[in-house]
Structure formats: C-alpha cells, structure tokens
Image (tube, rainbow, N blue to C red):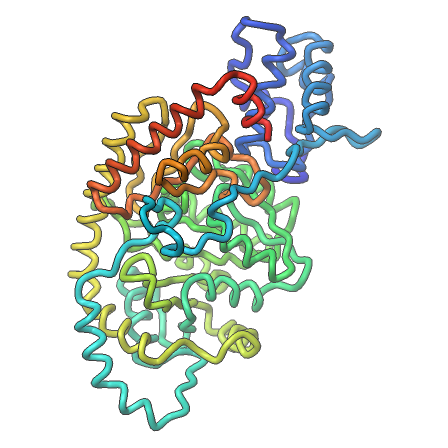
Length: 479
C-alpha cells in the first residue's frame, strides 16, 4: 500500500478485535497498528485515515485514536506533515546481520543452513555431462557465442510450453545464465530509469535488488493471508501505472501460494489495460508436490504482453546456471539489444547438458517431487512438535514454508539461532519496504534427519529469546 490512502473501513478490517480490555484502549490500538506496520500488512509510506475517519470506523473516542497516533509517531511508526496527513514508517530498516549478502554454501561448516531454498542435484546429471562432452567438439570450431542460446536447447524449452497448451517456437526463447540474469535482462529491456515496477510483498529479495539496481522504483503490494489481494493489485495498477510487474505466481517464494486460473486471467486483463508488461517468474512451476492440476501459464491470458522466466536451478541443480526468457516474437530483438551490454550468451557446455536433462525431465521430476514432499512433511511434523505456537499453511509445492511467529522477533532470532548452529534469514529480508518481523522462511531442502535436528535447535533458540526479561524483549521488538 506504499503511497496509497488506506480507507478507514479497510484499516478497521485489518485491525480486527484489537482491544482485549487489559489496559488503556489507545495503547492496545497503537500496538495493533504497530504490528500491522512491522509485519508489512501496512506498507511503509501508506497514508492512514484521519483521526476523525478512524474514530467513526472504530466507534471509539477521538482521544483514543489521537493518543494512539501520537504514540506511533513517538516510536517512529508514523510520520505526519501538516496538510498531508500521516503516513506509516519504520523506526529503522532492519537488516539481518547474516543472510543479506550470504552466499549459499559459504562459511556454513558445522551449521544447518536455512538461508538457501535450493536442492542438491538430481540423479543423472553426470550422465548428461558425459553425453554433452561427446557433442561438444562440433561446437569448438565456432566462436562459441550464442546470444539467444543454442537452437537445440531453445527447441526443448519451447516444447515444454507447448505441452502446457501455450504455443511457443524456439525463436521466442532467449537462454540466460540463470533466472536472476533473466530478471535483470527483462527489466533492462522493458523499463527505463525511474520507471515503477510492481511486485508482491513478501517476495524473493535478490530479484527486488536486481530491479532496484536497474534504476527502477519498486511498488510493493502486500499479500493477504490467503494469497494475492486482487482488488488491491488492481487498484495499485490503476494508481501507480507501473511500466512492468515482476511476480512469482507458481508456489510463490516464500509463501508457497499458487495463483488460480481465474485470478491469472483477471490480473492479466488489468495489466493489459494499463499497458504494464508482466514479467512472470516460473522457476518453481515444476515443483508441485500434491499431484494438483496446474493452472495455465500466465502468458496464455495475454500472449503479447507477458515475459516468462524459467530456470533449471530449482528443478535440476543450481550449479548449472541456465535460465531463459520466453517472450512474444515482437520483443525478442529488443531483449537481445538489451543483452549486448550484459553478456554474450550462456556457457555452451551447460546448455548441452540442460538439453539432455529436459528430454528426461518427466522421470527426473517424478523422483524430485517425491523426495521434496517427504522433506516438506518432515519439516511440518517437526514444527508442529517443537514449535506449536508457530503458524504455517502446508504449501502445495515449491521449496519453503512461510512461518508466522507469535511475536515480531525474527531479526533477533537470526543471531540467537546462529549461535545454536542454525542459519536463518529474517522475514524483513523478504519485504521490499521492511516489516514482516513476525515471519520466517524455512526451506525444506535439507535431508529429513537434519531438518528434525535443525528445528529442535531453532526451538531452543526461540525459547531462549522469548523467555528473556521484558525490557530486553521490548528492545528487540522495536529495533
């Protein structure tokens, strides 16, 4: 809701039953508002209703609302300007000490690493490498640069879309060095410095960083507890007129949500009306774990206005570093022009390897999904046993669970957990504008025995943190 006026009726609904009668009403109201801001349900920069409007919506005294707003201003959660009302803010942007620039697999010896949502390689990669090496000599007589990608790989990728009911030719595929490179390329091709790019909150932080480093302004729309808030998305599109939107709608990272076909159609229509280019990240599409029928690709609802990002990093192995863009044919030349100053193509050997893996993806993914489902269930059981106060919904796919803690202490938990041998990333790292301090992402990519031990250590860390003296806990929660 960044920069938007929050209607009093909407805020009243978010507040719910905010008064428990245990103290002054204004303090209960201020605390509930603070949690909405800290958890990202009210994004920083959102304009709250006037004192009079909120008084009428809640049916309380004007003094109660005025005192609550004053306390929030004193604590840094509201900023007021004469004539322009009050907007939400954060006292300081909380950045976890570990995780922001942490590279997976580095400096993690002896630690259980929950910072990386990626699995070890699928079986069969070594055989694919051997086969690819036999085919490599015929490429050695060429310069080795393929800005659009090897034709045989592009054809295999195009075939995966056709199997999903989306007509696609090899000429619509641009192979990249992973999904993040595809994101950067799409943003560079479709936007200019200063343009707005819409995304969800929470979302994948590295991709948001890539968008910002392209000079674009991120417009983050908070997700509801049940997924995407379509009315809010539509309103934000109308009000902010974003040049592009970057979204993860297949087992969204980190929430695990899957957008329905009806919502895809509705959102694609909103983007088309606003002439907003939708950039849809489908890197988790293959990881459906409950045998559910997958909705059509987002591009099926607007074939000329959608760029689709794919990758083998989550499905086969991150070490291959091969991703791609599927684009309307009219935009391919524009994308290749934008790429000229970034790189000259992905490595040939890795492209040959992925070509062979895609031909065997049905059998490879059957085994991958079964193992991930087993690990997901193990993590869920461990959390229910060791941390029963944490809330989560079982994701139908993807690689992680999005856990809601009873108190906004995830940044504080990062350091305590590390001392107990567990690496985690605070929920605030997944918010483009801060907040989400009551949330924690836990990937289920470790083996089952490790997951159980890691959760036990995490539970011990959380218990030691929440049993701290009240003055210490208060300091941690408002840091």
